[in-house]
Amino acid sequence: MSSEFITQVRNAARKRVLYLPHALQRMSAKGELITTLDVRNTIATGVVIEDYPEDVRGHSCLILGESINGRPLHVVCAPKDDYLAIITAYLPDRRKWYDDYARRRPS
Image (tube, rainbow, N blue to C red; front, side):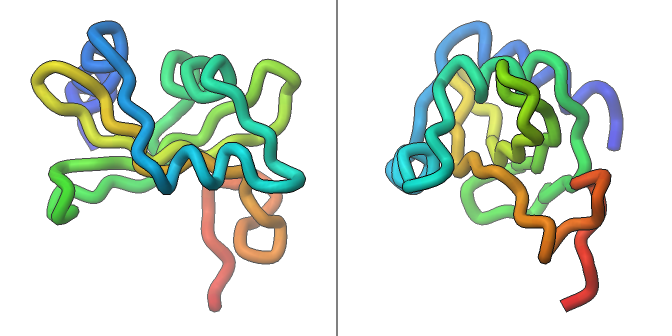
């Protein structure tokens, strides 16, 4: 993955951030309580751990970062010309991810 794409993501986020309905559902789910500040922090400081160039919603990626309280956080997003679409945001499940939260466990 090129650093050019994460720059594109961050530039789109500076213009506007649009939370898709699924993202809002996940962010407000019981036990999650992820804020927009948590998502913005992850976008600003996180690293791309998966790249989805062929996503039907447009080129997107999975970013690993931290909430403002230090919780590991995953954000799936897609940069557009005028905004960054937040597809989903969630706290990674240890049963599905290794302890670094950057690598999926085999299913």
